[in-house]
Image (cartoon, rainbow, N blue to C red; front, top):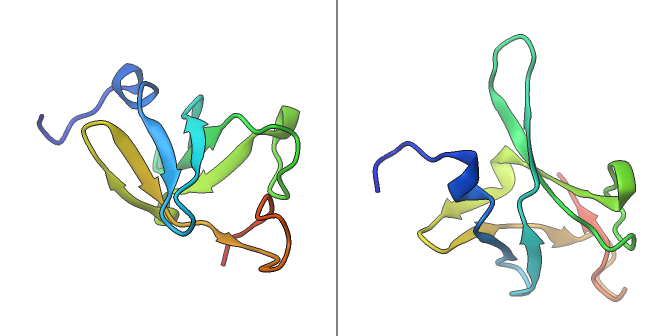
Length: 93
């Protein structure tokens, strides 16, 4: 596969947090900067229990938190905001 990746290809990949190995779901949206058309991040549907909320409980993953886009998965690094919590809350530095 080349450097190009369509949204259709991207949304078929599971997003996995490398911190705890949990599957966060599949990408449902891509967020762009209006001025520069730069990708700001991806959105994964949430279950309503996430701290970083967008509409309907979706989880926004900043582009700088994406570690690797592989053939089958997208690896991201989201650290728990509260280490002793049930790891449903994530922190963006």
